[in-house]
Image (cartoon, rainbow, N blue to C red):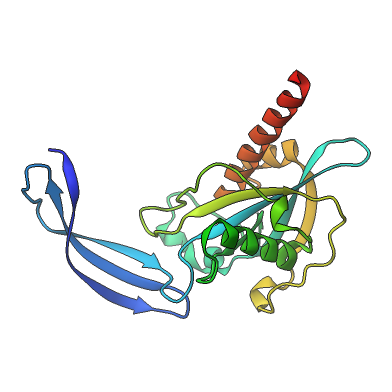
Length: 228
């Protein structure tokens, strides 16, 4: 039968860290005819004291010599991969050390980051902190609609944006956290970065998605220019 809604019977807080909270919601499916399913529960992770969503920032430039499109990638610390991938629970053995991971710039939207203006403001701040790139809010372009990276576990959505970089980046300042120490920033041709995604050398899903959307956006812009 067609499901019309959820019926929330109760919810529990199972645990809370500094950033994350584990919740359990007890539900029934409500069908179109008003009947209910058997009870079941769903566990989810959220950030009760911080923003729910995040902004993902694709920084790109034209190589001044070849005019090749290049994208900025950042290798940063990801302890969750090192300490969360216990060998006993993996379907396929994974010997990777997972110290630094290639990603595009990204950051959590804080409570004060409201609306499109707030997303743009946070993207500007993250580009400066993580990549040493100075942007204006007007430099940013949205790459389609929001996307949910792991809807079976978290309500977090990603807003994907991009901006052309016209000045050489400065050394990133970071946000003062040890988590942002030792990060490495590099430029790669967009086509090469996409190839590394296909080979599994760039393993971050949001990075691959953003690079594909950026490629389509730039191709469309070029076709518009060529057809003008």
